[in-house]
Image 1 (cartoon, rainbow, N blue to C red):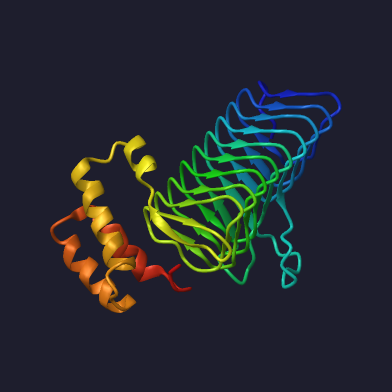
Image 2: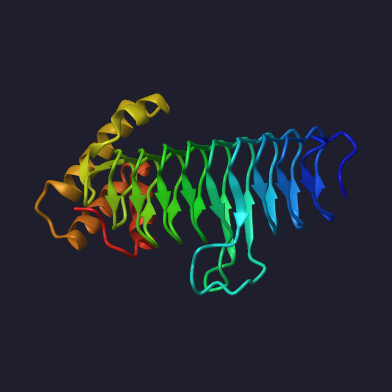
Amino acid sequence: MIHGSAQIHPTAIVEKGVILGANVKIGAFSFIGTGVEIGDDTEVKTHVVINGPTKIGKENKIFQFASIGEDCQDLKYAGEPTKLHVGDRNIIRESVTMHRGTVQDCGITRVGNDNLFMVNAHVAHDCVVGNHCILANNATLAGHVLLDDHVIVGGMTAIHQFCTIGIHAMLGGGSIVVQDVPPYVIGQGNHCIPFGVNLEGLKRRGFEKEEIKAIRSAYRVLYRSGLALEEAKVKIAEMAKLAPILKVFVDFFAVSTRGLIR
C-alpha cells in the first residue's frame, strides 16, 4: 500500500507491497523494493536503493547513492528473509550502506533514533546501533557490533566483529578496534588503546561535576591502578554502590565478550 500523500518522482521505482507513510518523498531514479516500509515525513533523495524486508521510521533523511537493507556480505548468508529496522530522525548521508541480519544471529540489524551516518559509513549484518550516535566518513562496523547510545566513531575507523562500544565512548579517526571499549572512554590508534575519559562529550550532555569526578575515578581504577582486570571490576562495582553513574560500567562488564582495550 502506498499512502496517498507520498511524493514519488516519475523516474523512481516503487515495487508492489511497499508501504509509505504520510508525506514520504522518493527522489529521482531511486528504487524501493518489495517488503520495505517507510514512516511519515521521511525523505529519500535521488539514486537511493532500499531493499526489504526493511522497516524505516519517521523523519529520516536518506541521501543519494545510499544502499539500505541489502543482502549482507557474510558468506554464510543463503538468501534467508532477514531484516533491517531503522528508527526515527536519522540522517543517512551519501553512499552509506546498511545490511540486513543473518539467521545465525537474531536475523535483524537494528539502528535506533537521531543518529548521523556520514559519507560512506557501513553498518554490517546483525549490528545494533543505539541512539544519538555519530559515524564519521568511512567508519565501518563489521558484523554483530553493538554501539550503545551517544557513541562517536571517527572517520576511517574500523570495528571488529562482535565488539561492544559503551555509552558515551568516543573513537578517534583512523582507529582499528578489536576489543570492547568501556563507557565514557576515548579510544584511539591501531590497535585502539584508551586515552582518557570523554570529558567534553559528558559536559555537553549535562553531566554534573560529581558524576564526572566519579567516572574519572573509575577510569583510574581500570587503567592506572595496576590492578588486574578482574580486581578492577570488583573495585568499580563497590564504587558504583555510592556513585550510581558507575553502574553502566558494571552492566558493560557483564556483557563484554572480547576483552577490553588496555
